Image 1 (cartoon, rainbow, N blue to C red):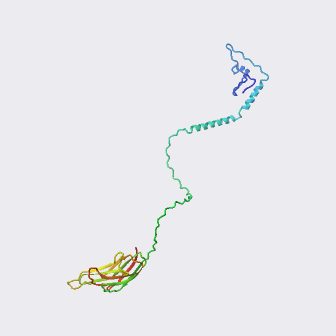
Image 2: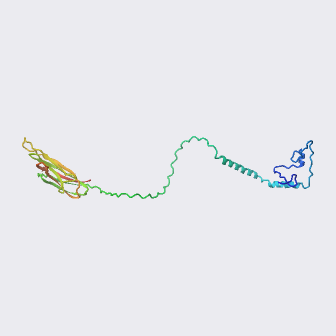
Image 3: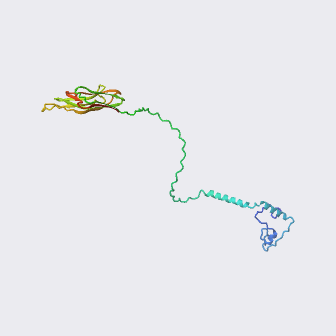
Length: 287
């Protein structure tokens, strides 16, 4: 700042420098900035500047300018605080990324299991999946519950002594075509002859023997009588003829028991149902 009317006019004086006038410098022994430099041999006596009448005006003007340029009370402190905070922030930004990491600590123990959480709400229904490939057509057959179907025909005393032909007959109602028939004849049978002979008892279904899979039959073979006694063996035994027959259509079925001869053997004297009960039992069974 230029201060008119002072020595060294045109020079700038810093704010912090203190102005010492010649009279003050003389009192302090000539050590001020305005003191006269000593000569080579003896120190020159201090010269006192005469006080001009208008010398006080520049001083007052300087004081007024200094007061106007001074910061308000507390202003310098707040500015310094802001600069300090700014420096701390710069230090953190610079050195925060380059701090060395210390060694890893000992792993901690597992904590206690936590309590069960609250059940979550149901999720959103998923989208429909892709359409599947066309499957094969399967034909399902729904079978009805099986109802037992059976019948029995019986005779107290047949005493039928024929050697060839039908002995007895029983009519049965078959409910299904894909079922099988189980037949049974139970009664006394006898065969006697003076030489070797053979007789055959068999079933027929509607006049024909079973073909599914094979005929249902039973035979009695007799070699000869006793020559010592000049007689023949005459034994009546309760016997049975039994089997299953498939391939018979549904409806009424005439089932009969017959007697006949064996192939390649002569017939003898046959008897069926002597002095006892004879019976035919028929039962329809699922396959």
